[in-house]
Amino acid sequence: MALWHDYTANSLVDLRANGNDGVMEASPYFNRVGVNLDGISQYINVADNDSLSFAGGGDIPCTLVSFFVPQPASSFPLMTKGVPNVNGEYDLILHTDGKLYVHFYDNDTVDCYVGRMYNTALTTKPSDKMCVIATYDGNRLSSGVKIYLNGLQVDDTNSENNVVNYVSMKNRDGELHFGEVSGKWGSYYGAGAIKHNLLIRRQLTATEASQLYSELINNAY
Image (cartoon, rainbow, N blue to C red; front, side, top):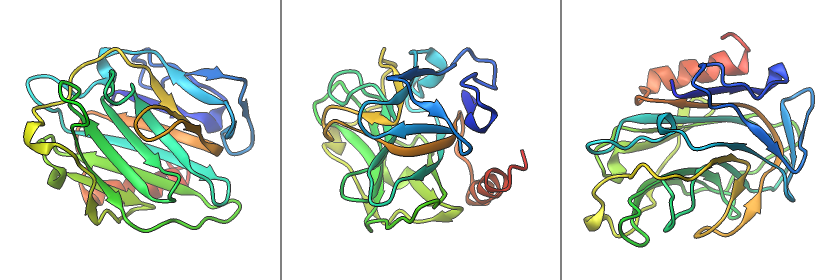
């Protein structure tokens, strides 16, 4: 595992002891859920580290996990590593259209990425808990990407561009942000609270994704 933040413990320390501790930007605060973000300027920043990149002789299988409670009818950039077409590597986003997306970028070519989306706008109520798990088998095709929402696979559409030129992600110097996105997909912040963020250096199976959701929702970890 490359990173595990458990904000329910009122801490930004990386529990995997990889040094990937978080820093609060624009003064978000801990509440009974986790870290609360205002949707205006607050987010969590993690400095660049090789352990946060999934590039090396091709793409490395990986899993991105975010457990959060968004404000109703709000977008939420769950995690973004770098900026697309600059130093971007991957992102996991509840976009302004209400849909979930995950992308993996080859920034050697402009607008070159593989990924998947859940082509249904989500509707949320106060206190709705959402666990989004995105997995990638490293095959450099969108077919290798999956999105799970609260333990169930939901992705149904490719979200890709210029895939004939996709070779692999590159290990760039971008920061990892939770709750903020800028560049290709617009610039906005997440409104709500984050409970957990995890980065895993392998692709979880469907059974493992369901089990992880169960453990996080029941605080049984």
